[in-house]
Amino acid sequence: MPKEYRHHTPVSNPYASLGAKAFLLYLLPAPLIIKLIISIIMISVPKLLLTAAALFFFYSAAHLTRMTLVRYAQTEDKKRPAKVKDNRLWGAIYTTVGVLIVMIMIRKGIAATLLMPACAFVGYVMFYGLPKKSPEVPVDYDNMPRATREAIKEAYDDLSVIESLGQQLQDKDSAIKSMLDKVLNQSYGIMTLLVQAPEDAGRARRFLNVYINRIKEILQQYIKLNQHGKADDLRERILSTLTEVEKAFRTKQSQLLDDDMFKLDIQLEVLDEQIKHE
View 1: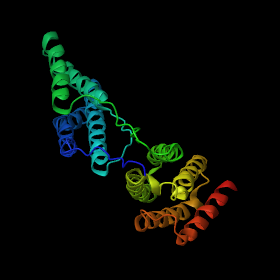
View 2: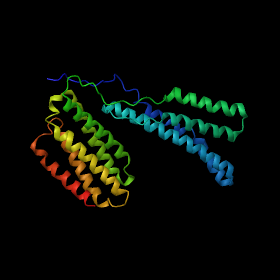
View 3: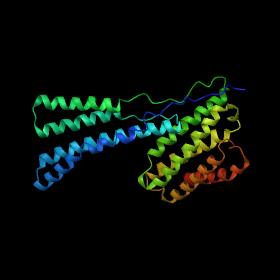
View 4: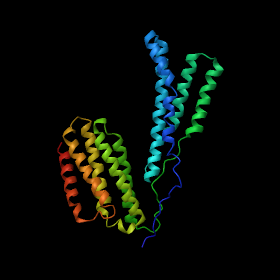
C-alpha cells in the first residue's frame, strides 16, 4: 500500500487580510477625482490629461494588487496547487508612476519629484511585498505507482488549464464562470482525497482521465466559438452541464466510479458532440 501523501498545511493564511488592505490603494487617489472634475469644468487639457493618467496608474495598481492578494488567499484557503499570476511588481511600478505624475503636477522641484516616487515604491514593497514564486503541484508522491502518479499530475495540469480558460470567459458568461469555480473547488477537493489515498486513484480513472479532460476540451471549444459569436445557443447547455458536474462531484467526492454517474456521462457526450458540429 502506497505511503499516504500529506499536503503541506500552513498554520495561518498570511494573505487573508491583505485583500482588504489592497482597497486602500483605491482610496489613495480619491482627491484626484475632484481635481479631474475641476479640470473638465475649466477645460484645462494639460491638467485633465495628467490627472487622468495619474488616476489610471493608481487604479491599475489597486486592481492588480487586490486581485493578486485575493487569489493567493483563495489558493491558501482552498489548498489549490494552482499557479497564481503575481502582479505586485507591476502594482509597485504603477503606484510609483502615479506618484511621479502627481509630483510633476504640483511642481515641487526635481529633488522632491524624484524622491517621492522612490518612497512610494519602497512603501508599496514594505506594505504589500514583492512577487514570489507560485506554488507548484506536489511532486513527491513517495511510493505511489507511476501510472497513478502520472494520472494525478495530468489531472492537476488540466485543472490549471481550466482555471486559465475560466479567466477568458466574457462578462455575459458570469453564471458559467461562477459555476465553473464551484466545479474547480470540488475537483481540487477530490484530488486531495486521491493524493491522500493513492489506491483509489486507479478506481477513479473516469474522473482523472474523462471528466476533467472533457470539461477542459468543452471550455476550449466554447471559447473558440464565442470569439466568432456562435456560442449563444450553447450557453444554457454548458451552464446546465456544469451544474450537474458540480452536484455529482460534491456528492461523490470519493466514489466517482459509481454507476449513477452514467447520466453525467451522457450529458457531457451530447454537449461535446453538439459543440463539434457548430
